[in-house]
Image (cartoon, rainbow, N blue to C red; front, side, top):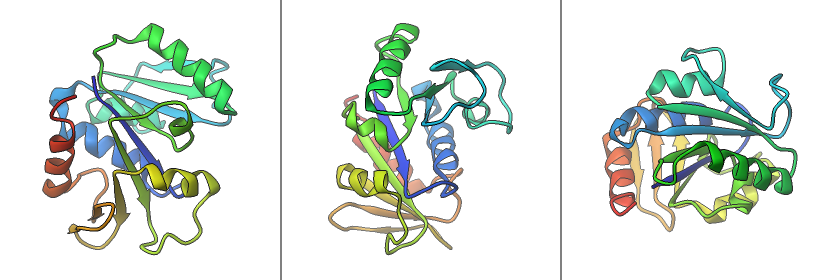
Length: 180
């Protein structure tokens, strides 16, 4: 089982697109996509499973990208995240590969791989949960004009299209998950 966490500097930076890009690039992993939201999305349940692929919701986009299953977890704080994760564990197999869209989940679990996304190369204007999560990142992804790789303390990948990850990022992710 592999667990990837994808987080980001704020709303609208492309976290869902990056999750979809990873799902599409590694279809053999048979991913289960999980979005953790701090506010209700109309489901009325702390753990809700998406059933239809499409473009209407983030979880529907996961399915459209090739995820086997997709869940929305609604949790306002760390205690609620832990409770929602416990409920999710009852619905999935121990061997399932999870890709989770959230910064705050890093307070409740240690993933095999953590990717943090920002649009500003200097990291300006990031939300507080990103500031605490960036230190746990295995790599930083920057939305940019062209695909590029920079070997830094934390590897940095610049991607022109988040939903279609670069061969360099795909190879790097595969290498990091080889034993998972």
